Image 1 (cartoon, rainbow over the protein chains, first blue to last red):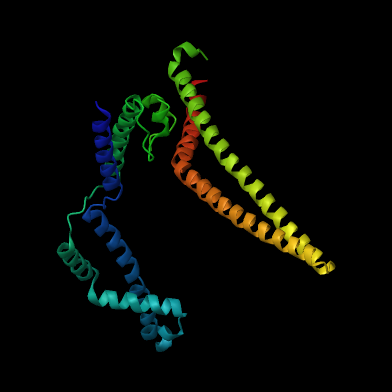
Image 2 (cartoon, chains in turn purple, yellow; image 1 turned 120 degrees about the vertical axis):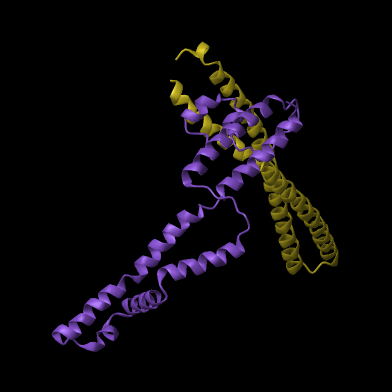
Length: 165
Length: 124
């Protein structure tokens, strides 16, 4: 392959690598994380219910909520508000809004991203390896990704030394 | 280690030596400019001392001929300092330009050294 074409392919693959690195997780994966976080926020509701039960059963001080430390009070407030709205409602509203904003960004699971990156990095290594062989007096690019390819270290050796990342 | 089975290693080492030699060349150029800057600064200091000497001589002598000679000496020294400052500015620009333009190569060389270190133990 000619140097010009090799460099064109290198630029293309580097663009793909950047895109894959910036890929968002799938919506379902994010939803799971969001739900887990919101469920955590709602947790104080149950402890408040438990303590309110003590007001009925043991005559505990009704104003206990305001005796909580400020941080716990804030958490309790958020938890109660969120419980009133409902986690499902909140997630649905957020996902509806996200659907309107969706710009078609690339989405991949962590495993998919790793697999794709591994392949792309190997391709890039092979291209930079070829590029070095086809310089024919042309100056080297300033932004070489794999110095090992400049040294013409075979891809398998570079991979086993952990250099292909 | 059987080097005949690892021609890539010899090849890589040769390439690294070539890159190191190029890096040495850049360092030598930078050092030459540094030396030049040092010499210029020494000359600037010398001329400043000369001016002080002429000024001191002026305070000690009442002879108009001495004064005229000292004043001329100060004028000459100031002219030399201006010229030296200009040379220093030029040397500074050359130094920074060379440093900037060689930075990608320096980074590549560093990357090559690391790659070589990472791969060599796998063979030995």
